[in-house]
Length: 398
Ligand code: GDD
Ligand code: MG
Image (cartoon, rainbow, N blue to C red; front, side, top):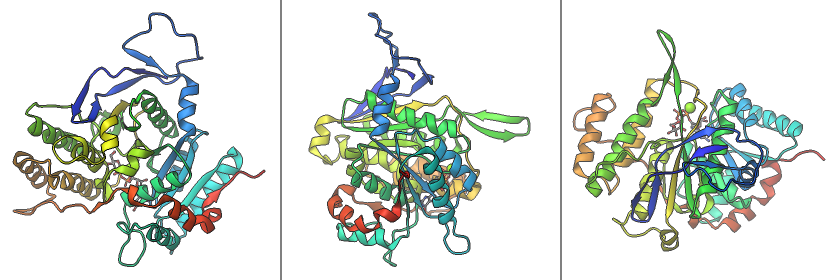
């Protein structure tokens, strides 16, 4: 794979945010002895290096009632070396969609000779195991894990930790192009191979997000929600530092990955607020304005890569209300961050009123925030799940 070198980095305290790097070539050919005068602007990442990172990576697929055909396509795009972890919050009553997902995954793993894990978010054993490991933040009044994409992702991170993975990447289950899933994961691997710190995050920026228009397909560059989130997130930094910036281009990136040490360290926010909150948690915890979240990580620094894929992103259209909910969740997280100045509050209120997501003097609700997962005793969590691991695991037949 050939990718642009990162040529520009902004620093906030000990957090380093690299500007967007474009993928230039999906497959850069066989490994060769590097030439003496390497190209400074372009980085070639050998296939073996990508595979080394994929081998240490769990790919978590959060899913809730997605079309089975899409789910099947998505799993087929995940490189063979990665461990697949599906965290499903799909229906089990009227139709047992979870059962269908499990069956599809099982069949796929049988023919591809690979291993996977699949759990249901509402499985009482998962909730009990979390409780016994000392973590109740994501449990609801009914004692089960709360609904929400973030809550599913957090379960996925913990399972990746129990299984000893070094990296965790997220892939949505409603993607129409398996080839793009494959590319996103290569981007994750490429990002980690460039990282200097063990606390690293890779966020994917789609080259295009095609939409149907009156004139046929229109290859839109920016999603409606991302456009606003990025602008507001950049304003948070600009007002704090006194220098206007446009560095953030992946404020909402659902397709992203983290090293396990970083994934265990960050406080998260509920539902769709999770991706903007990850950035806020890094800036709050390492930006030098508030007390340091973790001295060891501060010493190494936290690195954020933003990589632009070649593949366009095509996923399910979920409608206006869904977009509004997502915007409200993300901007709610920013609004209530201690880093946000008055100007940012005004900007958020204006945007949400204009979009009809807030009326009058209403303020955006504060998303629920969760303590970092490092407070979970992973050994206890793993031990409490041991009796269930056979039920959760799909292993290739011998
Ligand atoms: N486990 C679990 N639990 N998964 C869920 C839940 C839940 O309660 N709710 C949604 N999901 C799954 C969906 O099935 C899908 O696979 C993924 O989470 C993303 O949800 P979508 O409903 O498809 O969200 P989106 O496409 O509007 O937004 C995506 O892209 C945004 C921009 O990149 C999400 O990934 C956002 O988080 C992201 O900000
Ligand atoms: Mg989607």
